[in-house]
Image 1 (cartoon, rainbow, N blue to C red):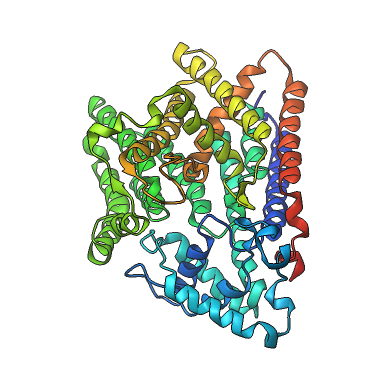
Image 2 (image 1 turned 120 degrees about the vertical axis):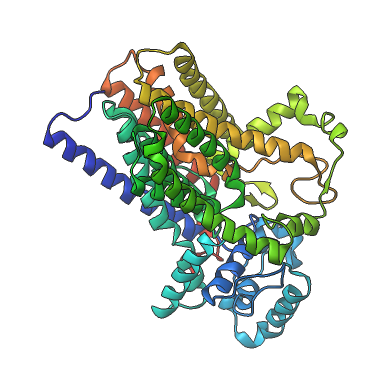
Amino acid sequence: MDAPTNPASDIRERKIILALCLLAAAHVFIFSAAFPFFNVVDEQMHLDLVVRYSQADIPRALTPPAAGALPFLAIYGTPEYLWTPASQPGGIIPPPPWKLPIETVREKLLAKEAGYQAVFKNHEASQPPLYYVLAGGWWRLGQSLGLDGGRLLYWLRFLNVPLVVALVWLGGFTARKIFPENEFIRVAVPALIALLPQTAFYSVQNDVLSPLVFGAAFVLLLNFWEAEPPAMRLGAAAGLALAATFLTKISNLPLLAVAGIFIALKMFQLLKNRKLRASVPSLAWLAAGAGLPMAAWMAWCQAHFGDLTGSSLKIQFLNWTTKPFTEWIHHPLFTPAGFWCFLKGNLATFWQGEMLWHRQPLALPAVDLIYVWLTLTLLSVTLVVLVKGSKVLASTQARALWFSLALFTSLFVFYALLSVKYDFQDCFYPSRAHPFFVSGRLLLGALIPFLLLFAFGLDQALKKFGRAAKSAVLAALLLFMLISEIVVDRSLFANTYNWFHL
């Protein structure tokens, strides 16, 4: 499709992006409200950290929950994520404690709080601080607005609404920068974000911030490559965005490694063009912007958790052990069935999330397969075009897509390495019986690069069709995403533990 050539078409596209931002806000708000607390993706741990950071209490060890978090943990959690009604006394899920007279539940709630204090250790305590600083400020804002109890708890969830709205806008901005002549891709990327059925967007956790901060870093690095010499302000901004990526989640390290290679290639290009000396100030600002915040947090982790990333205590708590290198090759990942399990599991949960409900995946196997095969097909189309060096792409577009492919691939390589490296002992997930990291939310840092690859592949697959046909296919895909998500999650809307029943 052609890029807008007049102010009217440009205004129309801006209205589409605005509509998609509003759609994303409604989508995330409604589903965040429908999901009860506390899900199986460590939502209790993340709430505890938010409460601590809201009180300027930065964790220094794997500690029991903060006093300010205990009442929320005891009162507002449903057992239904891991247990069926048949497993409960009387064969029914007990009513929410806040709907019962306090005299009848006080002792039980106090016992639950004591149980949390006795057995709960927050193994996420060493996670980088950026999300928790932001969420802690949002929590304090909710308190200043007079919110408390369950409404304050859901207020924290609703922080995801502005974050996803910003992500939709950034997706549209990025697509417009890379494909200024292709209206289909410019609309497809933000539209897919707006209706992405990823359950991490309905949860209190730091994964939701990763696609936003690295999406910003991705755009800034592309700008950095195109500039000769790059400006100091641009270098500083790119460095700070990379630091923000690191300070959001330690699992973003593969993205930073690929970004480092990208910067090194840019330096080689500057050297070749005899512009490296003129670029030294910008490179220095980039290094300082990225390196100083990272170094400060690593020094904190080394001082309080015993290693530079803070991972050793968590690994020890989970009882994982490192396998001898000679045993890695025997991992089922190196079999066709194991590799497919790893690939399918990560792609399916990248789209639909990894929630359990009654200890069963909150997803439909048929829908999982559609997402997996659609992803593999369209990424293959993109790869074929890139390998052929098609004239369809300008050099800047090819570079952005190769960069995107390297970023997304690096995450799979990283989690494959972790899968084969550890013996997971008696851990619930990953486990000896299923020794794979298949958590699509951990890939979300590369969401915008991935959707560029996906949307370009879809555009190329439909290149023989006109604008109306492409728009119809995109609309059908978006409708499928929304309807399948409603079908999967429909039972949650009537759940008495959710926001609609406070």
